[in-house]
Length: 298
Image (tube, rainbow, N blue to C red):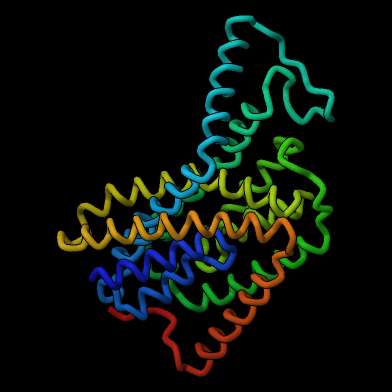
């Protein structure tokens, strides 16, 4: 991998990880266009996972104060419960959270619980996820359109009234289950989780913020796991460009988070829905006409 290829992949990853248009799909396009590692699916998958660490670093930086508050409250509230032996009661807001937990500590639990589905499914289907079938353009095109239609439906039927303080255990499970869709190429992690959030009545900005926070355990775990495995499959001369790509993805990813949160305060996800449908349709036509190969033959 050259430094130019690394910068291109870093920019693509940073732009598309948090905007609901599928980072995997666009990284597959970029890797084909630049011919990274000759199209080797294992090396490309490892590259994608490692440079995701740059975008997850962007989440840590952007939400640093939130994460610090969640961590401090989580430790404080549970230590207080253990030492005071305070009984479990529920708050007066429809039983959304136990009354002995602050909103920040409860959000910590919701992130943990919401991360369980993708953790279980991701480990169970790890070999398939890393294989060549997940780079198949037929799958990518179909998922681009399918999630776009579901996101459009969520925009129509969602009440968009619930904010972060209204999040319940069920909400975390639904959004966490939606995140499992992101294991399919073309689905988009942010697209899937924002879709799930809209279906359960979250405002667009709240759905996006919870989506970003929920991405931390999954992307960090995947990146660190692939980083360990990458040592054995990546050529020695790839590590310099890989570091550059990760840094670039972090910088661009930070700007993408800022943009999407600001955008969703006043706008719907319609522009992303249209983009996904158009891109997916173009891919299907090119594949059907035989002008594009579904997979790279190595």
